[in-house]
Amino acid sequence: GENVEQHPSTLSVQEGDSAVIKCTYSDSASNYFPWYKQELGKRPQLIIDIRSNVGEKKDQRIAVTLNKTAKHFSLHITETQPEDSAVYFCAASRDTGRRALTFGSGTRLQVQP
Amino acid sequence: DADVTQTPRNRITKTGKRIMLECSQTKGHDRMYWYRQDPGLGLRLIYYSFDVKDINKGEISDGYSVSRQAQAKFSLSLESAIPNQTALYFCATSDRGTGPDQPQHFGDGTRLSIL
Image 1 (cartoon, one colour):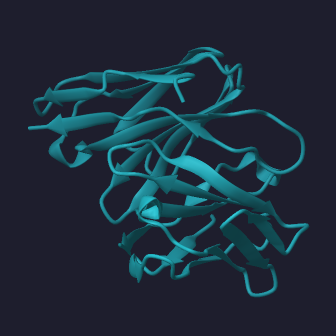
Image 2: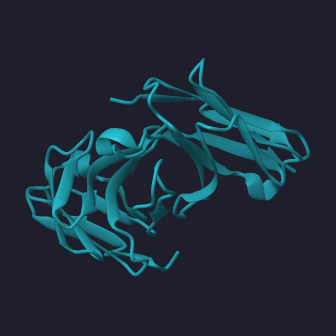
Image 3: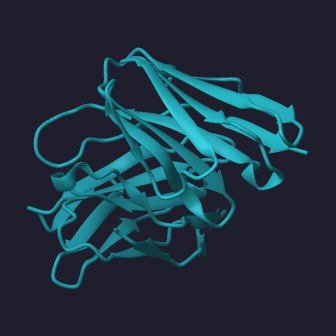
């Protein structure tokens, strides 16, 4: 089955700096890659996703890049703010074989004011 | 997202007890999922259901069972609870869609403690 590895497990940045979180996946048939943000005590919420037919997607201060050859994808947050502090999860799935999402282990991002 | 409701929100129980966690949704989604979350391990899939008659095991189904009573309801049972099942449990839903998978929408979670 699919295996998703996520790095780093913790990340501390100064407000205004950029943050990058990286994930690798094992199943070359995976074609959907969402990112979820989980604030303390809250539910995970989708912040951005990308499908395998594109290499990059942006939404204001966040962007995701996908390298299908290397089987890795990354989340980029620019101009970080204290409210970006949360745990971020990457995930991967494919539409064939009726598989469900496999999540990475999470990255705890702390933005220092 | 109040469209996915989990009950109870918190539960403390003893080893050996039977526990049922319930999930209901008003989003009209066909697909429902149960995950458990442990510190440092992310979200791990227990069971998932693509429609009422289609239930599949996830990566950590041992010790758990599920029931899809209707399109809107998906319950998770621990037949004989053990302490290492202490965790935060999330229900999620997604639309059938076409092509690649669709975004999942999570409930608020059930914090389960087994003494």
